[in-house]
Image (cartoon, rainbow, N blue to C red; front, top):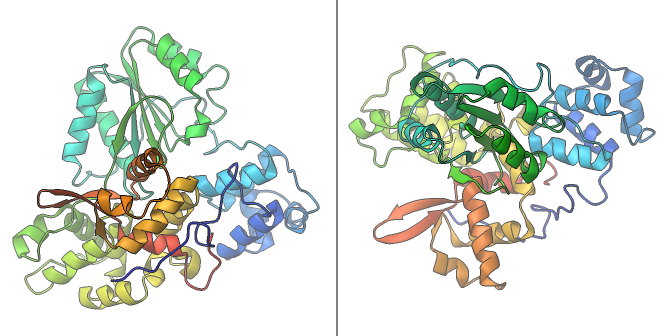
Length: 425
């Protein structure tokens, strides 16, 4: 498939300065988010537990700097992703806690295991190795939205709690929590015992280098694991998480053993217990997982769609009209795969956006010399942009004989274009 050429300065990747878009008002942002959620002003007011008049005043522009609590309630009601919330709070010029803090500084325990994790044995083992000894005290798990970072963190936290005897503290409400006494609270909870603090869904700007250093200094046996969609500025062990492996061939034994296919069949079994992968359908099932790059959120969504379509028919739909299946903001299908990826791409650096536009011209696989031939800026900036995209999961390594090649996931290409028929960026 020949990919269209894009310009990093076009509407697909608008220039972002200081976290917000030039000329975008708080009123238009809230109104657009509400319309995309198919909500009336009354419904938004009800979900946010505020008055309809407050919503109208915000959308009309009469109120341009709402109270922090009001904006937090609206963001929660609209179920905004982290990048969208960052833009909203920047335009409003207020700092909004994300996610909303409800239970104090740090939860005593990690979330419970709700189901067995599939295809992450190597990743779990490596993270356990990195964190168990205490030699690596800060590890950042990064990757595309929907890769399964939180699920992996839950598994690793429980594994270390059970096998290494670590006291595990978990927080999904980082902003504002640790600014004043969080480091003291962690130190008081751990004492001299070894512990693991998991900061799930953290945005890099929310945790300054001084704060991380303070927590590690006050708790000398503390390890910190961060899950984030973006690279972390503090010196840390970077752990980019790739999607699940997909079948390398259409052979029946390899297809049924593939982690992506195993996840798909588990999800499908909830709605179609009678479905089995067979010699007749295994090629289509394998290709379905390849088309969505093995991204866990997308694979689980495919499992839902297979309740209504045969594998071959669904495969044709994904190739011909992928937005109808993968972009809920355009279709209202309930699970959004491409939207969060699109939001993440909008927060790329200027070099990152330029590099991504070049990569779409090279096709699905390429080498560093291929990119160097197109790059017109300083080489050190190219190196930084490549590393940034790799840690974000926007690109990934791809085995191709003895040559080191890289791949641009299909979902990244689809998300960069925006949903059909809707404004991009």
